[in-house]
Image (cartoon, helix red, strand yellow):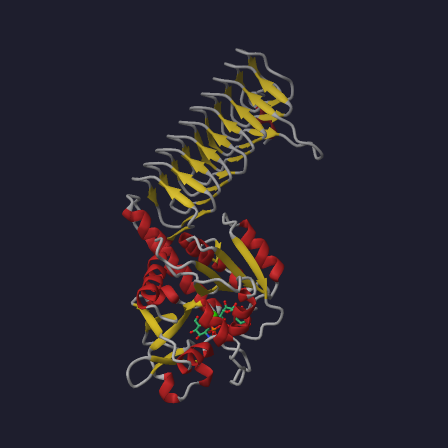
Length: 462
Ligand code: UD1
Ligand code: CA
C-alpha cells in the first residue's frame, strides 16, 4: 500500500440527465434503495482516497443533501455552474485539488452505479504497474450503442475516444467502449484538460478528448478491459435504470443465498442493500424488504409481505403482511393480512393474526391477537388473549389515549376499550362489552345490555 501514489477521486455528477425525463437530478435516481451517486461513493470510499470530490451543478443543493446523508464524511463538493460537458465538469473538480498534488486522480461518473471495488482495484493496479499517464476502464460489447468508442492505432495503442454522435460508420462498429472511469496522472491531466475544446456535434467539452491530447503529447495510455460489461452500465434513461435495478437485485439476492439464506425464487423478491438476514431464513416470493432491516435466523418471511426499517429476531413467521418500523421478537407469528405500524414492539411467541392492525403498541410475550382487531397506543402484557373484533378506542377526535391490559387477561370478542383505560391482570372482559372504566385485577367485567328472549314471538307476529 505504502509505495502507492496518493489518490483523489472525482465523481462527475453535475448533469441534469435530460434523457431520464424527470425533475429529479439523474444521479439521485435510486437503485435498490440507494441513489446512483450513493453507490459510487460507497464503492470509492473503500479505497480511502485523500479526498473524494463530487462535482455538482444541476439541482446542486438536493444532490449535496443526499450525499450528506451517506455515512461518509470525507466528501468535498465542487460546483460546475453551467453544464458544458464532462471535461468542464472535471475542471471544476480539479479546482478542489492542491496544485502540487503528486498522485493519481480516479475519475468516475455518478451515473455508473454498478462499478465494483474489485474492478476498480484492477484498474488502479494496472495504472500503477504500467506507470501510464492515463488508464481507461473499457469493456468489449456487442451493443456499444451510446458509449464512446475506444479507437486504437495500427499498433493497438489507444489514440482517442470517439463519441457516438461524432463517430463515422466504421468507428461505430468498434466494440470496445469507454466506461467513463479513468485514472489520470494529475500533472498530465491538468495540462491536457486545458486544451480540450468544444468543436463537436454537441458543442460540449468532452473529457474523452483529453485522451487524444495525451496521445498527441506522447503520453502513455492504457486500458483495463473488464469482462463484465453490466458493471459499467451508464444509466442515461429509465430503461437502463430498470436494468441496473435488476442487476443489483440479482447480485444482492445471490450474495444472501451464498450466505445461507433461502430465496427459492430470487427474481420475485426485492431486498435492499441495507437489509441484513440470518442463515436458514426464507424469503418467499412477492416480498419487499426496504431500509434498515435486521432479520434473524430461521425466519419465514412472505409470501407477499412488505417490511421496512424493522428488527425481527429468530424463528419468526410473517405471511401476507405489512410491517413498518417495528421490533418483533423470536418465535412470533404474524399474518396472514396483518398491519404492524410504526413504534410497535411484539415480544417473543406472540401472535398477530388476520386483519389485525397494531400501532405504537407493545404486545407481550405469548400474547395473541389473532383476528380482526385494532390495537393502538396500547400496552398488552404477557399471555393476553385478544378476542376477534377487539378495538382499542384510542382517539377522541383530538387526542390519543393509552390502553393498558395487564398479564393473563382474556378480552372477549367484539370488545371496545375506550381509552384511557387499564384492565388489571387476570381479568376477563365479556364479549361485546364497551369498557370505559378501569377493571381491577382478577375481575369479570360485563358492559352490555341484558338479553331478553321472547318465547313464541315469531308465531304471534307472522
Ligand atoms: C460519457 C462519455 C462516454 C462514455 C459514457 C460512459 C463523455 C464526453 N462521454 O457519455 O465516452 O462511454 O460516459 O457512461 O464524457 N456531467 C457533468 N457535467 C456536464 C456533463 C456531464 O457533471 O456538463 C456528468 C454527468 O452528470 C454524468 C457524467 O458526467 O455523471 C457523464 O455525462 P453523460 O452526459 O452521462 O455522458 P454520456 O453521454 O453517458
Ligand atoms: Ca452517462
